Image (tube, rainbow, N blue to C red):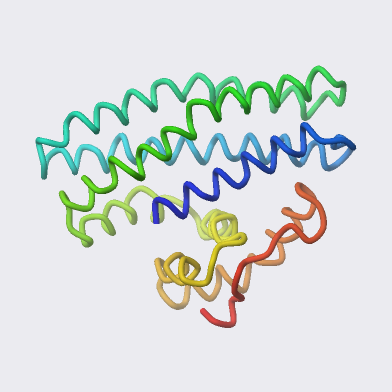
Length: 220
């Protein structure tokens, strides 16, 4: 599941960088939508890191003191990433209110700088940290952490938005993993009730035809 979420970040970082770097450059509602979406990504990434720092890493360390070195490396990565995220947030706000070329190029540069630090971190977390996590805690402990930090604090509308963001374009196997994190009734509401809203948003941000889950909610 961690890889699924990371891939969603990778996908949208690449989409945003391509949109900002490729003529014709975004303007009007699309420019503002891209800026708002990038700022939303930064809030989502902040919450993602906070859940790890405050919940997952301390749990893993309690279960496996030998994990200290890799967890310290994850904390150090987060500390390096945070200032780059703040720069992106500031640049996105400027781009939302200014369609001049410097605002666009500054946001693109901020995203490029963020990707230089965050993309290696995502890969290191998947390749080095997650095997330690899997060996240190049980599936039940993982699920309890996920519920406490990633699901229960969020209203259904936010879960619906994030769920469709995650399943945007993923393969059918990972689609089933994601949607079955929710019980049947909330899952039905999320998949049926928020798909159209997310599709409209994705179309505004990325253009027509860009949203496409690899399988449809009828298979849920």
